[in-house]
Length: 247
Image (tube, rainbow, N blue to C red; front, side, top):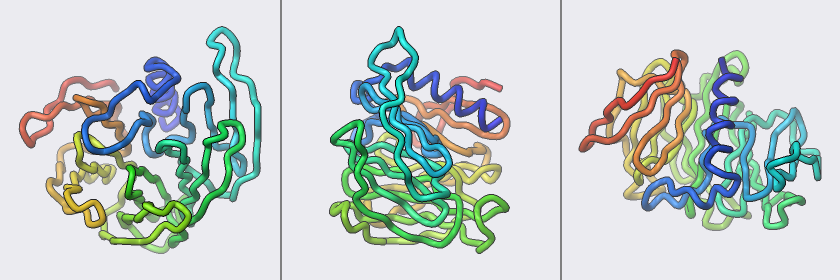
């Protein structure tokens, strides 16, 4: 099922064009990537970045008529799980921390810094000033019984600073939608956090009837993956209204 979701998200991402800067994800969040937070790949203009075991692969996809061309494969720390793009930086989530790489030279990612945390599954998203990280326990994620939402100040990307820690149930993917932060709690539901003070997210709503593993916030709709399929919601006031469902 996880592979199916990844394939669907990849097809969706490619259908929107390789230049993700042409896609707006709503006001105020500063995000241009449209991949989910638990994705192991992202596209920046003419390049596809893919995590593979302990390597980061860079593929040239500038010619839509040809297969992607591998232009670089570099060693990165083991146990990397997720990749998220913000501007010219890649945020790589590992089971023991977040690694930040600069891709201003697209074919030569350069290490910038690392934030270390306790062992756990670790998706990450970021805007201009802050990165938001969830860590959870589980057989494949460490057994420290740590389930948290962590906020990092990345105004200086060379030195990420922990600003807040919020205890969660078993958080999974997360993302921005219309200025708010949404965090999937798996079968337990979906949480919306107010980011009026970005360094200190405040729980606004807990949608216990909407299971969520990962999500993608678009301008007017929110795509959510769960164990039962993919759903699409729009906002009706402060409520989320179901538009469509794919099982």
